[in-house]
Length: 228
Image 1 (cartoon, rainbow, N blue to C red):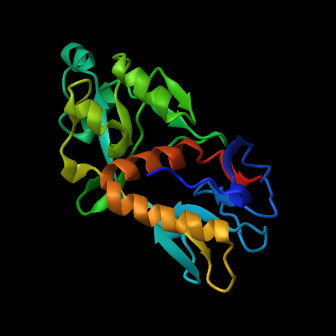
Image 2 (image 1 turned 60 degrees about the vertical axis):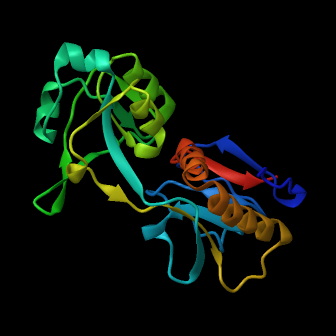
């Protein structure tokens, strides 16, 4: 099912620094979990945000399932450097780190003793806000990558990447939701988008959710989606 062409709410991605929020009279914003926009005050129609960050007075429409992490490497890398068995083993490996535009790194989180533990990994390659480059580097045997399962499931299935570590130590985070104010009359464009999301996810399931995860994560945290 193709996304409806909605003239009033055409969606595009624009790169803007996190320190300079981009305002629009009407539109949709997908934002950093570190910088949360007030969509009412800034006059956005709606936003995309992870479920645990959606305010209680907003109406939320699930766009993806909860997100599972995977640690992966290429078969060539594993053949040359061995297969890590525990998160502690990653200290001896070249880990591909993902840096946010603001300068911090995406943490490598694991589950241990019933709680979340952050590991301080190191590596020769740092990628700034581009998960596709992380995947490409992993495929080329550069090192070990920490990514959403939706990004790499097909590559694990066809053998291009090897899944590392047991799923029991890998965290699960809330999925993305489209959210909008409960006390505002929604535009026809927004209603069409909501109907499309519900229909697409119902009909195409995991494939549609994987595409949405990739779309959301590719514009977070430094990009906004806005109306034209």
